[in-house]
Image 1 (tube, helix red, strand yellow):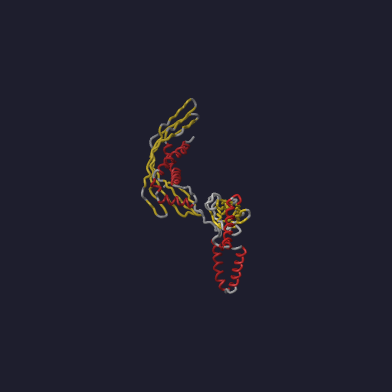
Image 2 (tube, one colour; image 1 turned 90 degrees about the vertical axis):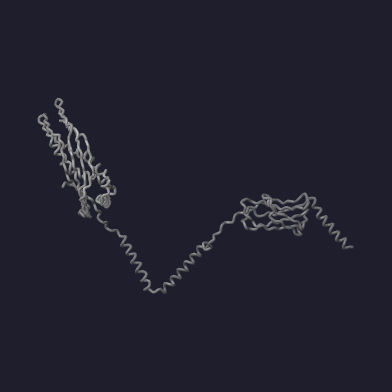
Amino acid sequence: MSLTELIPVIKKELFQVLEQTITSKQDVAKLEAVSTTLYWYKEAAEQNMDFSNLSNKIANTIIDNVVEPMVKPLLENIQLKIEDGHAEVRFNTSPFKSELRPYVEFVKKINNADVAKIKIKFQINSDLQIKDIQVKHIEENTTINFGNLVGSIGLSIISINTPLGNYEDSISLGSKSFSFPLPEISF
Amino acid sequence: MKSFHFIFLIILTSMATISTPFAFSQLVLVLNPVQSSVEEGQEVTFSGRISIEGQGLSNLSIDIKDAISGQIIGTTSTDTAGQFFLTWVGVYRGEPYLFYAEFVLAGAPASARSEMYEVLVTQKPIEESDTSETRTESGVEDELADSNSELAGNLDYINPDFLLLIIIPIAAAIVYAVYRSRPRSSAPRPSVEIRGGLD
Protein backbone atom coordinates (compact mmCIF):
# COMPACT_ATOMS: atom_id res chain seq x y z
CA MET A 1 0.00 0.00 0.00
CA SER A 2 1.42 3.34 -1.06
CA LEU A 3 0.07 6.78 -0.33
CA THR A 4 0.79 7.77 -3.93
CA GLU A 5 -2.48 6.00 -4.72
CA LEU A 6 -4.12 9.06 -3.25
CA ILE A 7 -2.64 11.28 -5.93
CA PRO A 8 -5.13 10.44 -8.75
CA VAL A 9 -7.97 11.26 -6.39
CA ILE A 10 -6.40 14.53 -5.36
CA LYS A 11 -5.52 15.28 -8.96
CA LYS A 12 -9.12 14.84 -10.09
CA GLU A 13 -10.42 17.18 -7.40
CA LEU A 14 -7.75 19.82 -7.93
CA PHE A 15 -8.39 19.74 -11.66
CA GLN A 16 -12.00 20.78 -11.04
CA VAL A 17 -10.85 23.63 -8.81
CA LEU A 18 -8.31 24.83 -11.34
CA GLU A 19 -10.61 24.64 -14.37
CA GLN A 20 -13.27 26.64 -12.56
CA THR A 21 -10.66 29.23 -11.66
CA ILE A 22 -9.60 29.68 -15.28
CA THR A 23 -13.03 29.67 -16.89
CA SER A 24 -14.48 32.07 -14.32
CA LYS A 25 -11.98 34.68 -15.44
CA GLN A 26 -13.42 35.92 -18.71
CA ASP A 27 -10.46 38.22 -19.27
CA VAL A 28 -8.45 35.14 -20.15
CA ALA A 29 -10.76 34.46 -23.08
CA LYS A 30 -9.92 37.89 -24.46
CA LEU A 31 -6.19 37.31 -24.47
CA GLU A 32 -4.66 37.40 -27.91
CA ALA A 33 -2.70 34.28 -27.05
CA VAL A 34 -5.94 32.42 -26.39
CA SER A 35 -7.67 33.61 -29.56
CA THR A 36 -4.60 32.73 -31.61
CA THR A 37 -4.47 29.29 -30.07
CA LEU A 38 -8.15 28.74 -30.83
CA TYR A 39 -7.50 29.80 -34.42
CA TRP A 40 -4.72 27.25 -34.66
CA TYR A 41 -7.10 24.54 -33.52
CA LYS A 42 -9.59 25.67 -36.16
CA GLU A 43 -6.84 25.38 -38.77
CA ALA A 44 -6.20 21.88 -37.48
CA ALA A 45 -9.87 21.10 -38.17
CA GLU A 46 -10.70 20.84 -34.49
CA GLN A 47 -13.86 22.86 -34.97
CA ASN A 48 -15.26 22.06 -31.55
CA MET A 49 -12.44 23.73 -29.72
CA ASP A 50 -13.67 26.73 -27.78
CA PHE A 51 -12.52 28.61 -24.70
CA SER A 52 -14.15 26.09 -22.39
CA ASN A 53 -12.36 23.18 -24.03
CA LEU A 54 -9.13 25.13 -24.07
CA SER A 55 -9.44 25.89 -20.34
CA ASN A 56 -9.93 22.20 -19.79
CA LYS A 57 -6.68 21.44 -21.62
CA ILE A 58 -4.79 24.14 -19.75
CA ALA A 59 -6.05 22.96 -16.35
CA ASN A 60 -5.21 19.38 -17.21
CA THR A 61 -1.70 20.27 -18.29
CA ILE A 62 -1.07 22.36 -15.21
CA ILE A 63 -2.35 19.70 -12.87
CA ASP A 64 -0.27 17.00 -14.56
CA ASN A 65 2.81 19.03 -13.70
CA VAL A 66 1.99 20.42 -10.27
CA VAL A 67 0.01 17.82 -8.45
CA GLU A 68 2.92 15.70 -7.34
CA PRO A 69 5.21 18.51 -6.16
CA MET A 70 2.22 20.09 -4.51
CA VAL A 71 0.85 17.04 -2.74
CA LYS A 72 3.80 14.71 -2.23
CA PRO A 73 5.40 16.73 0.60
CA LEU A 74 2.01 16.66 2.28
CA LEU A 75 1.74 12.91 1.97
CA GLU A 76 5.29 12.49 3.12
CA ASN A 77 4.18 13.85 6.45
CA ILE A 78 2.17 10.72 6.82
CA GLN A 79 4.27 7.68 7.60
CA LEU A 80 2.53 4.39 7.33
CA LYS A 81 4.20 1.24 8.48
CA ILE A 82 2.49 -2.13 8.22
CA GLU A 83 4.20 -5.29 9.39
CA ASP A 84 2.64 -8.65 10.18
CA GLY A 85 -0.81 -7.18 10.68
CA HIS A 86 0.47 -4.37 12.83
CA ALA A 87 0.02 -0.87 11.60
CA GLU A 88 1.96 2.16 12.68
CA VAL A 89 0.87 5.58 11.49
CA ARG A 90 2.72 8.78 12.15
CA PHE A 91 1.54 12.00 10.65
CA ASN A 92 2.01 15.66 10.75
CA THR A 93 -1.07 17.54 9.57
CA SER A 94 0.36 21.01 9.59
CA PRO A 95 -0.44 23.09 6.44
CA PHE A 96 1.92 22.84 3.54
CA LYS A 97 2.42 25.88 1.37
CA SER A 98 3.94 25.79 -2.06
CA GLU A 99 4.59 28.14 -4.94
CA LEU A 100 4.99 26.54 -8.35
CA ARG A 101 5.41 28.01 -11.81
CA PRO A 102 3.96 25.67 -14.39
CA TYR A 103 3.76 26.59 -18.02
CA VAL A 104 1.52 25.51 -20.85
CA GLU A 105 2.88 25.63 -24.35
CA PHE A 106 0.79 25.37 -27.51
CA VAL A 107 2.87 24.38 -30.48
CA LYS A 108 1.62 24.71 -34.02
CA LYS A 109 3.09 21.96 -36.13
CA ILE A 110 3.18 21.37 -39.85
CA ASN A 111 4.58 18.08 -41.07
CA ASN A 112 5.67 17.36 -37.50
CA ALA A 113 7.81 20.47 -37.43
CA ASP A 114 7.24 23.24 -34.90
CA VAL A 115 6.30 26.40 -36.75
CA ALA A 116 4.96 28.59 -33.95
CA LYS A 117 4.62 28.50 -30.17
CA ILE A 118 2.57 30.22 -27.54
CA LYS A 119 3.79 29.77 -24.00
CA ILE A 120 1.69 30.79 -21.04
CA LYS A 121 3.47 30.73 -17.71
CA PHE A 122 1.42 30.43 -14.55
CA GLN A 123 2.07 30.77 -10.87
CA ILE A 124 0.11 28.55 -8.58
CA ASN A 125 0.12 29.11 -4.85
CA SER A 126 -1.32 26.39 -2.73
CA ASP A 127 -1.98 25.97 0.94
CA LEU A 128 -3.00 22.38 1.65
CA GLN A 129 -3.72 20.43 4.75
CA ILE A 130 -5.04 16.98 5.48
CA LYS A 131 -7.50 17.05 8.31
CA ASP A 132 -9.41 14.50 10.34
CA ILE A 133 -7.23 11.44 9.75
CA GLN A 134 -8.73 8.50 11.59
CA VAL A 135 -7.24 5.10 12.26
CA LYS A 136 -9.62 2.35 13.23
CA HIS A 137 -8.54 -1.08 14.41
CA ILE A 138 -11.37 -3.52 14.93
CA GLU A 139 -10.26 -7.07 15.71
CA GLU A 140 -7.82 -7.87 12.90
CA ASN A 141 -9.04 -5.21 10.51
CA THR A 142 -7.35 -1.84 10.37
CA THR A 143 -8.83 1.05 8.44
CA ILE A 144 -7.21 4.41 7.85
CA ASN A 145 -9.52 7.20 6.85
CA PHE A 146 -7.48 10.04 5.48
CA GLY A 147 -10.14 12.60 6.27
CA ASN A 148 -10.32 15.69 4.10
CA LEU A 149 -7.95 17.64 1.96
CA VAL A 150 -8.57 21.24 2.84
CA GLY A 151 -6.91 24.25 1.38
CA SER A 152 -6.85 26.91 -1.24
CA ILE A 153 -5.25 27.44 -4.61
CA GLY A 154 -4.37 30.77 -6.15
CA LEU A 155 -3.63 30.99 -9.85
CA SER A 156 -2.15 33.76 -11.93
CA ILE A 157 -0.57 34.22 -15.34
CA ILE A 158 2.89 35.69 -15.01
CA SER A 159 4.01 35.80 -18.61
CA ILE A 160 2.90 35.03 -22.13
CA ASN A 161 5.19 34.40 -25.07
CA THR A 162 3.70 34.52 -28.54
CA PRO A 163 5.20 34.86 -32.03
CA LEU A 164 4.06 38.47 -31.95
CA GLY A 165 5.64 39.41 -28.64
CA ASN A 166 6.12 38.70 -24.97
CA TYR A 167 3.96 39.93 -22.12
CA GLU A 168 5.31 39.95 -18.64
CA ASP A 169 2.35 41.46 -16.83
CA SER A 170 0.83 39.37 -14.08
CA ILE A 171 -2.82 38.51 -14.44
CA SER A 172 -4.51 37.15 -11.36
CA LEU A 173 -7.06 34.48 -12.14
CA GLY A 174 -8.23 34.31 -8.55
CA SER A 175 -8.08 31.79 -5.78
CA LYS A 176 -10.42 29.12 -4.58
CA SER A 177 -10.85 27.39 -1.26
CA PHE A 178 -11.94 23.82 -1.17
CA SER A 179 -12.41 20.78 0.98
CA PHE A 180 -12.96 17.30 -0.29
CA PRO A 181 -12.83 13.89 1.34
CA LEU A 182 -9.98 11.50 0.78
CA PRO A 183 -10.56 7.75 0.54
CA GLU A 184 -10.01 5.31 3.36
CA ILE A 185 -7.70 2.36 3.16
CA SER A 186 -8.32 -1.00 4.81
CA PHE A 187 -5.73 -3.68 5.40
CA MET B 1 -114.44 54.04 -113.55
CA LYS B 2 -113.18 50.62 -114.51
CA SER B 3 -109.90 51.43 -113.00
CA PHE B 4 -111.62 52.54 -109.80
CA HIS B 5 -113.39 49.26 -109.64
CA PHE B 6 -110.17 47.44 -110.23
CA ILE B 7 -108.52 49.33 -107.42
CA PHE B 8 -111.44 48.71 -105.14
CA LEU B 9 -111.28 45.05 -106.01
CA ILE B 10 -107.66 44.95 -105.16
CA ILE B 11 -108.28 46.68 -101.85
CA LEU B 12 -111.10 44.35 -101.11
CA THR B 13 -109.01 41.35 -102.05
CA SER B 14 -106.21 42.60 -99.89
CA MET B 15 -108.55 43.15 -97.03
CA ALA B 16 -109.83 39.69 -97.53
CA THR B 17 -106.30 38.42 -97.57
CA ILE B 18 -105.41 40.26 -94.41
CA SER B 19 -108.67 39.91 -92.68
CA THR B 20 -108.64 36.22 -93.20
CA PRO B 21 -105.61 35.75 -90.91
CA PHE B 22 -107.63 37.18 -88.11
CA ALA B 23 -108.70 33.64 -87.80
CA PHE B 24 -105.30 33.08 -86.09
CA SER B 25 -105.66 29.40 -86.00
CA GLN B 26 -104.65 29.39 -89.62
CA LEU B 27 -101.62 31.69 -89.23
CA VAL B 28 -98.45 29.63 -89.41
CA LEU B 29 -95.07 31.08 -88.43
CA VAL B 30 -92.21 28.77 -89.13
CA LEU B 31 -88.65 29.41 -87.95
CA ASN B 32 -86.17 27.19 -89.67
CA PRO B 33 -83.77 25.28 -87.41
CA VAL B 34 -80.48 27.02 -86.60
CA GLN B 35 -77.17 25.58 -85.48
CA SER B 36 -77.21 24.63 -81.80
CA SER B 37 -73.75 26.00 -81.03
CA VAL B 38 -71.69 28.84 -82.41
CA GLU B 39 -68.57 30.63 -81.37
CA GLU B 40 -68.91 34.18 -80.17
CA GLY B 41 -68.61 36.60 -83.07
CA GLN B 42 -69.96 34.07 -85.55
CA GLU B 43 -73.12 34.87 -87.43
CA VAL B 44 -76.39 33.03 -86.99
CA THR B 45 -78.91 33.37 -89.79
CA PHE B 46 -82.53 33.02 -88.88
CA SER B 47 -84.97 32.29 -91.65
CA GLY B 48 -88.57 31.28 -91.84
CA ARG B 49 -91.93 31.94 -93.34
CA ILE B 50 -95.25 33.23 -92.21
CA SER B 51 -98.28 32.03 -94.11
CA ILE B 52 -101.98 31.48 -93.94
CA GLU B 53 -103.11 28.22 -95.40
CA GLY B 54 -99.92 28.06 -97.37
CA GLN B 55 -100.16 31.60 -98.64
CA GLY B 56 -97.11 33.68 -97.69
CA LEU B 57 -97.76 37.06 -96.11
CA SER B 58 -95.59 39.93 -97.23
CA ASN B 59 -94.42 43.07 -95.43
CA LEU B 60 -95.06 41.74 -91.97
CA SER B 61 -92.71 42.55 -89.15
CA ILE B 62 -91.19 39.50 -87.51
CA ASP B 63 -89.31 39.71 -84.24
CA ILE B 64 -86.65 37.21 -83.33
CA LYS B 65 -86.69 36.94 -79.56
CA ASP B 66 -84.77 35.20 -76.83
CA ALA B 67 -87.16 33.41 -74.53
CA ILE B 68 -84.71 33.36 -71.64
CA SER B 69 -84.03 37.09 -71.46
CA GLY B 70 -87.25 38.16 -73.15
CA GLN B 71 -85.28 40.50 -75.37
CA ILE B 72 -85.78 41.05 -79.08
CA ILE B 73 -82.47 40.43 -80.78
CA GLY B 74 -83.65 41.64 -84.13
CA THR B 75 -86.63 42.54 -86.29
CA THR B 76 -87.09 41.84 -89.96
CA SER B 77 -89.81 41.99 -92.58
CA THR B 78 -91.22 39.27 -94.76
CA ASP B 79 -90.77 39.32 -98.51
CA THR B 80 -93.45 38.71 -101.06
CA ALA B 81 -93.29 34.99 -100.44
CA GLY B 82 -93.76 35.56 -96.73
CA GLN B 83 -90.18 34.58 -96.01
CA PHE B 84 -87.94 36.42 -93.65
CA PHE B 85 -84.21 36.42 -92.92
CA LEU B 86 -82.21 37.88 -90.09
CA THR B 87 -78.54 37.67 -89.35
CA TRP B 88 -77.33 37.94 -85.74
CA VAL B 89 -73.78 37.97 -84.42
CA GLY B 90 -73.34 35.59 -81.49
CA VAL B 91 -72.59 37.19 -78.11
CA TYR B 92 -71.13 35.00 -75.35
CA ARG B 93 -73.09 35.14 -72.13
CA GLY B 94 -72.37 31.85 -70.39
CA GLU B 95 -75.80 30.31 -70.87
CA PRO B 96 -77.66 29.23 -74.03
CA TYR B 97 -80.18 31.33 -75.89
CA LEU B 98 -83.66 30.09 -76.68
CA PHE B 99 -84.74 31.73 -79.93
CA TYR B 100 -88.12 31.93 -81.53
CA ALA B 101 -89.82 34.11 -84.14
CA GLU B 102 -92.88 36.13 -83.25
CA PHE B 103 -95.37 38.10 -85.21
CA VAL B 104 -97.45 40.62 -83.34
CA LEU B 105 -100.13 42.53 -85.13
CA ALA B 106 -100.39 45.96 -83.66
CA GLY B 107 -103.53 46.32 -81.65
CA ALA B 108 -104.35 42.67 -82.04
CA PRO B 109 -104.82 40.63 -78.94
CA ALA B 110 -103.22 37.58 -80.45
CA SER B 111 -99.95 36.79 -82.18
CA ALA B 112 -98.12 33.96 -83.84
CA ARG B 113 -95.04 32.25 -82.48
CA SER B 114 -92.68 29.79 -84.01
CA GLU B 115 -91.06 26.82 -82.36
CA MET B 116 -87.98 27.49 -80.24
CA TYR B 117 -84.36 26.58 -80.86
CA GLU B 118 -81.59 26.53 -78.30
CA VAL B 119 -78.33 28.11 -79.37
CA LEU B 120 -75.19 28.00 -77.21
CA VAL B 121 -72.64 30.70 -77.90
CA THR B 122 -69.20 29.52 -76.85
CA GLN B 123 -66.27 31.69 -75.82
CA LYS B 124 -63.69 32.40 -78.40
CA PRO B 125 -60.34 30.77 -77.57
CA ILE B 126 -57.52 33.19 -76.71
CA GLU B 127 -55.24 33.50 -79.67
CA GLU B 128 -51.47 33.64 -79.39
CA SER B 129 -50.39 37.23 -79.74
CA ASP B 130 -46.96 36.34 -81.07
CA THR B 131 -47.55 35.04 -84.50
CA SER B 132 -43.91 34.01 -84.76
CA GLU B 133 -44.66 31.14 -82.35
CA THR B 134 -47.26 29.79 -84.69
CA ARG B 135 -44.65 29.02 -87.22
CA THR B 136 -44.60 25.43 -88.23
CA GLU B 137 -41.77 23.21 -87.19
CA SER B 138 -40.77 22.71 -90.75
CA GLY B 139 -40.66 26.50 -91.15
CA VAL B 140 -38.22 26.79 -88.24
CA GLU B 141 -36.09 24.05 -89.68
CA ASP B 142 -36.07 25.81 -92.99
CA GLU B 143 -34.91 29.03 -91.34
CA LEU B 144 -32.15 27.18 -89.45
CA ALA B 145 -31.03 25.51 -92.63
CA ASP B 146 -30.96 28.87 -94.34
CA SER B 147 -28.94 30.50 -91.56
CA ASN B 148 -26.51 27.56 -91.48
CA SER B 149 -25.94 27.71 -95.16
CA GLU B 150 -25.49 31.46 -94.87
CA LEU B 151 -22.93 30.99 -92.10
CA ALA B 152 -21.13 28.34 -94.08
CA GLY B 153 -21.02 30.69 -96.98
CA ASN B 154 -19.59 33.45 -94.80
CA LEU B 155 -16.93 31.13 -93.34
CA ASP B 156 -15.61 30.58 -96.82
CA TYR B 157 -14.57 34.19 -96.81
CA ILE B 158 -12.95 34.23 -93.31
CA ASN B 159 -9.22 34.46 -93.28
CA PRO B 160 -7.70 31.31 -91.63
CA ASP B 161 -5.35 33.57 -89.68
CA PHE B 162 -8.34 35.30 -88.17
CA LEU B 163 -9.73 31.94 -87.10
CA LEU B 164 -6.44 31.15 -85.37
CA LEU B 165 -6.65 34.44 -83.52
CA ILE B 166 -9.97 33.28 -82.07
CA ILE B 167 -9.19 29.62 -81.57
CA ILE B 168 -5.82 30.05 -79.83
CA PRO B 169 -7.10 32.24 -76.96
CA ILE B 170 -10.11 29.98 -76.48
CA ALA B 171 -7.91 26.90 -76.40
CA ALA B 172 -5.55 28.62 -73.98
CA ALA B 173 -8.46 29.53 -71.72
CA ILE B 174 -9.69 25.94 -71.76
CA VAL B 175 -6.24 24.59 -70.94
CA TYR B 176 -5.88 27.08 -68.09
CA ALA B 177 -9.30 26.19 -66.70
CA VAL B 178 -8.46 22.48 -66.82
CA TYR B 179 -5.11 23.21 -65.15
CA ARG B 180 -6.80 25.17 -62.36
CA SER B 181 -9.41 22.50 -61.78
CA ARG B 182 -6.92 19.64 -61.60
CA PRO B 183 -6.83 17.73 -58.34
CA ARG B 184 -4.00 19.26 -56.37
CA SER B 185 -2.21 17.66 -53.53
CA SER B 186 -3.76 19.07 -50.37
CA ALA B 187 -1.62 21.34 -48.28
CA PRO B 188 -0.39 19.73 -45.09
CA ARG B 189 -2.90 20.32 -42.34
CA PRO B 190 -1.39 21.94 -39.29
CA SER B 191 -1.78 20.36 -35.91
CA VAL B 192 -1.55 21.77 -32.42
CA GLU B 193 0.40 20.08 -29.69
CA ILE B 194 0.13 21.02 -26.06
CA ARG B 195 3.08 20.71 -23.77
CA GLY B 196 3.54 21.54 -20.14
CA GLY B 197 6.19 21.70 -17.51
CA LEU B 198 7.57 23.52 -14.53
CA ASP B 199 10.01 26.35 -14.61
